[in-house]
Structure formats: structure tokens, C-alpha cells
Image 1: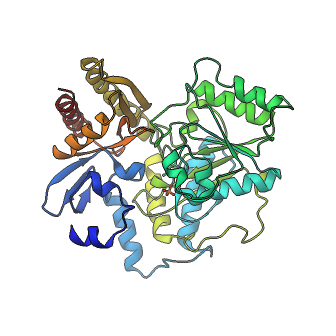
Image 2 (image 1 turned 180 degrees about the horizontal axis):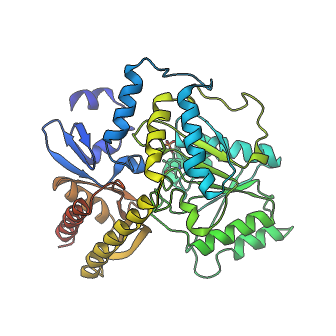
Amino acid sequence: MDIFESLESEVRTYCRAWPTVFSKATGSHVYDEEGRAFLDFFAGAGTLNYGHNHPRLKEQLLLYLADDNIVHSLDMYTVAKRHFLEAFQEVILEPRQLGYKVQFPGPAGASAVEAALKLARKYTGREMIVSFTNAFHGMSLGALAVSGNSMKRSGAGIPLSHTVPMPFDHYLDGQSFQLFERLLDDRGSGLDTPAAVIVETVQGEGGLNTASPEWLRGLADLAAGHGMLLIVDDVQMGCGRTGPFFSFECAGIVPDIVCLSKSLSGYGLPFAVTLLKPELDVWEPGEHNATFRGPNPAFVTATAALDFWTGEGMEKQTIAKGEQIQVALGKIAGGHSEAVTGLRGRALAQGIAFAEPGAASAVCTAAFERGLLMETSGPEDEVVKLMPPLTTTTEELSEGLDILRDSVDTVLV
Ligand SMILES: *Cc1c(COP(=O)(O)O)cnc(C)c1O
């Protein structure tokens, strides 16, 4: 441990919850250097939807590297990029009748969000962006300005401006858009007409709060009615985490801009895209740039990962596995009705919220000691969050859910 603690910055976090040194991983398991196995219900915070080192993706990557194919190319045309764009069009966009253009904004989710915010402001000529309570969109200044968490926001060290938060679905009782709509319509409200609204369908970091399809449709209508662009940040919930490839498909809406990253490469390689309706493509060449916006190895694994999406199998299995989790969480909650404040999330992004401060973290620690990796979510870290790879087998799910139940029972004696 010494080199980590002496040399690595205090900013490190996950390693504090999981004080061991990891070395290997396959499928839904990771192993530390002592050879101890952990079932991974964390999946790189949603980056490893197809598990660790998926053999089919690994094979394509190794072939690509062994043959001296180009690795770094900024935004030059490459064969690997062509294959990715062709496959993305054929497997993802065309079957869903989505006419998006694809921007490669740089490798991180925050890069995709920054590009979306800049483009919305440029296209509309407006400054204000509406975000939602408990949103998380990344740690760069623009993305942080539309994120809710006060600890992360204060890290900016400067005012985060030109944004305004509105209540997410179920934040207040009753009519969700009453306030937002009234402020937009009232010329005395003090709210400048926004360029865009940015939303997650399920708030991965903010506590697995879930927007209903009706709420999302209402938001899309509100945005269209007031000339605001609708940006869906699908960085964590996209690539099938909630069932369909895009998490907003359940609502039947078509956002103006979509951000994807985390599981897009399918292999844990950094890769992001910003999808935009063609009429929004008002960029000047080079107006938004990044050194690592042509990650060819990621193009290769992302193209291979799209094979998971040629039929409906992935979506159906994910929903079925989600039901398995929901039943198990329901039983755990039923056994501790005082301590559990609710079940959260959808499909393979679900969680269980606890009343007692520290309970969720204690459950995750107990689970780690029993060989299961899970993280917490929510403004008070009050939710134990389950995000297994979509490729996790039902047996592995049962095994993990048993460990979870055992961990909850231990913590809530
Ligand atoms: C992780 C995440 C981001 C930021 O992605 P980075 O790669 O960490 O910059 C943005 N939005 C959502 C919803 C995320 O989950």
C-alpha cells in the first residue's frame, strides 16, 4: 500500500472503501493480488456493461494491436473509425430511426457533456442551462455547473454560473412541472429563457432517482414548447444499463443532443460521443477539440460490442435480470421495513435506500469483506447501488444478492 499512500494524491476515493490491490479480472469477477475473488456489482460505475475483458472484444483488440494498426489519430479518418461509424449507424441509429450526427468530443463523459452545453449555447445564442436536483454530469467546470452535489461543486473554487436547478421527478409531491412552467411563462419570474435542459433518466450518482416515462415526455414537450434544447446525459444509463440501448427509449422521446461514454467502448477504454440532431451541427471546424478524440482501440472494441445489440436479447435479458434484483431487494426491504426508506432505480441500476446515516456505507463494507463490490449513491451516500455487468449470469446475481442480504442483516442487527 505504501507507494499509493505516500505518492498518490489525497483525492483518491474508491481505494479507501476497498483497501486491497486488484490485479486481474474476467467477466463479473475481479481478483486482488492475493488471488481473492470479488463479485463485481460496481462494474466501473457503469463502464463495464459487458464485464471485464470480454473474450470477443479482447480478441478484436489484440488482433488490431498486433498488426500495427493506427492507435492515435486525433480526428483524422481511419479504418477503425469508419467501421465504428458504419456499425453505429446500422445497429443503433437506423433501427431506431434516429438521424443523429456523431461528434467525438474527447474521451470522458465530461467531454461529451461540455460539447453538448457549448453547442446548445452556440446554437440558441442563450446562456442559461436548466439542470435537475441531484444531477451529476461530470467534474469539469461546465459539467459541474449543472451538477447538484455541494461537495463536488465547492471543489470548483469559483462561482458556477449560467445554470439553474429545477426539481427532478418526484422531488416535490404533485405536479412536477408547475414551478418550471410558471417561471418560463412569467415575464417577471427572473428566469432567463434557457438554451437547454440537461437530464439523466435515472440519476446514477444522485441516488438512483428515476424519471417516469410520463415525466420525460412532459419535459420533452416543455422544452419543445419553449425553444429549449433537450440534452439527455446517457453516459451512465446508456449502452443498455436500463434495458434498451438508450435509456430514454422507454419514454418514446427523441432528445436534441445525447451524451454517451462509460460503456461505449465496451471494454473500459476511454471513449465518448455527443450525438446531435443534424440541424444543430453549427460547429466551425476545430471549434471544440481534444487530443484523444480518435481512440482507435476504443473504436475497435466499441464496434465489436455493438454485436450485443443486433437482436432484442440483451434488452430482454437485462429487464429479466432487473426483475430478479427487484424481487430480492423487496425481500430485504420487507425484513427491515423500519431501516429501509425505499427501493430505487430500474433494470440493472437498482438500489436500496437506508434511513440511518452511514448504514449504506456499512453495508458496502460488509459486502466487500464477503467478496462483493458495490458502491453507495445519493447526496448522503444513503443508497446501496447495484450495477452488475449486463452479462452477469442469474446464478452470479443470486450469489451477490445473498451476500447483500447477509451484509444488510449484519449491519442492521
Ligand atoms: C460518469 C458520468 C459523467 C462523467 O463522466 P467522466 O468520464 O467521469 O467525465 C457524466 N454524466 C454521467 C451521468 C455520469 O455518470
